[in-house]
Image (cartoon, rainbow, N blue to C red; front, side, top):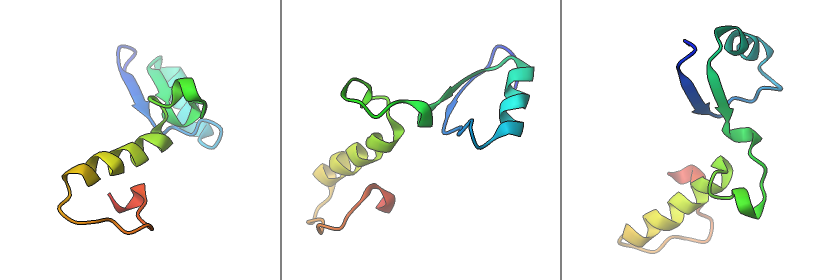
Length: 75
């Protein structure tokens, strides 16, 4: 990536040493969604909680009932 680029993604910097080194060397801006803390103030930015919000919003447009076992993985 070039220095003027910004990547916002699940990056897992602790598990991806090689990818982290390449990102640091390139000078790109990286925001790791997986590093956002799971606290009340950060819920709107937390990638793990956003999937459940998507399920709730999709259910409002769905034409039948969801069972109790539905999770964000179904979407």
